[in-house]
Amino acid sequence: MYFTNLALIIDTNLGGMFTEGVWSMSGAGGQQISCASSTGYLTAASYVQNMGSAFSDAYWQISSINIYSQ
Image (cartoon, rainbow, N blue to C red; front, side, top):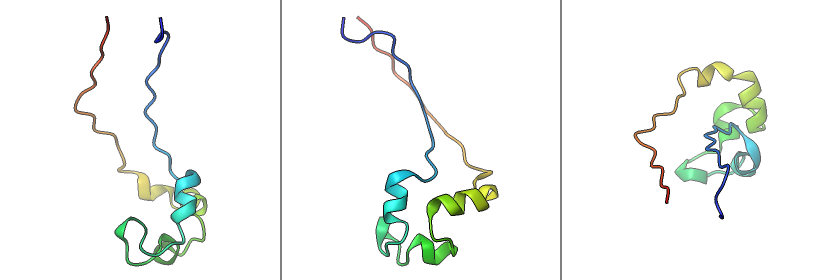
């Protein structure tokens, strides 16, 4: 009745609003210096666009997914 035609979407967001909001902040995520200072890129989007090879080993490891039904 309430849950029909659902889809599971797993996504890696390399940038986005959260990342851009903290990219230039020192201390974000427990880091001593900002990502901008560490990478030399002013924005997360610029870093992702220019350093795509930095993500070549990125992957998802999902140990389980539970599906419940009535």
